[in-house]
Amino acid sequence: MLDLAWMAVLSYLIGSLSGALILGYVRGIDIRNQGSGNAGGTNALRTVGWLFALMVVVIDIGKGALAAALVYLIPPVLSDPLPSTSVASVCAFCAVAGHVWPAYFGFRGGKGAGTAVGAVAVIAPWCILPMLLVWLATLLGTGFVGLATVLAALSLVPSMLLFGPQPLPLALTVLAISLAALLVFTHRSNVSRLLQGNENRFEKARVFKRKNKSS
Image (cartoon, rainbow, N blue to C red; front, side, top):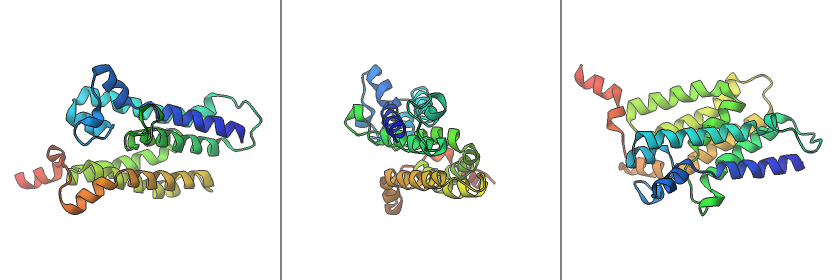
């Protein structure tokens, strides 16, 4: 259990390394004071530009992948009886929590989607394609990034259960439900704006609508 504890703390600290806030500090800006106030890739794209946003996304995905892979990269200090899948799942969730509530930035970070994708890519790579398809279909059909992310997060649970190894380790089921719930929670403002009809929309992303209009 001690191995699990120090790896979980380390994963949280890795997750607290917010790409948007670190790169923003280098450029002399705090992205939390711009646009939607979210320290994530979408707000970075809207307020700073695509190159900055790309670097943010790479960092956020990378730290999620690193945290999830800790148990495979670093040998345990003690003889911990827990399965590596269980340890990796806890580390993955802690990294996403670190992104949302970063220790280095006043516990005010992003919404965790990029970090979650990086972690899932390491622990359950079979979930990535279904999640990506749900995200793309929703974005291209509606233009709502927040809605696309929420639906992709919710799709993690059936993807994990349907396409994973059988029997599926309990840790992966718990991880899928926990990440989906956390991402829905962090996107609650998006859901609220959607219900009120004033959510920001990427009109250029609405390929389906544009095709229908042109036909």
